[in-house]
Amino acid sequence: SPCRRRLARLASACALPPLLRLALAWLLVWGLFVFTAMVAVVYARLIGLERTRLMLFSYAIANVQTLTLEEPLLIALNALLPFIIERLTANEVCAEMTNEVLSSSVGTCLRALQRAVFGGR
Image (tube, rainbow, N blue to C red; front, side, top):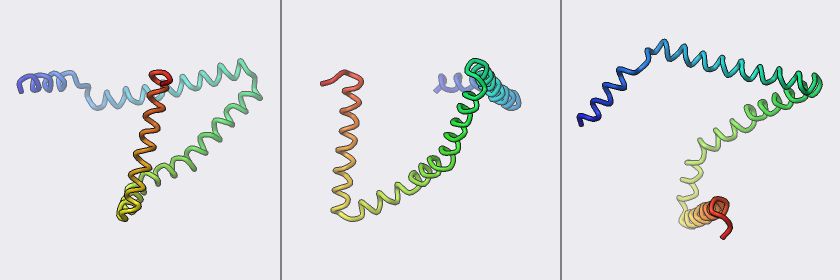
């Protein structure tokens, strides 16, 4: 349609050059780094050296735990889930049980979400 063509021309006319977009992205990354470093320095000056070390140590442990345990487990689960569901639904009895479990758990989650958002009913 003519409207879409006009919008496409406008978008291409307003688009930044790729090198400028890359430079802005790196500027944003470095800006966030400087901001978080400044937050760490401010907290270090406010709460003292020992508590700051403990705080940074706990952040490091949490980061290592996330990158070595949680992320690989979630990636493996996402990769294997279609295979597991295919195997479960190959058998009629397992397919019915899987359908029942999924429908009841989704229904329970939706009801809890409805109660949380709209009040207890």
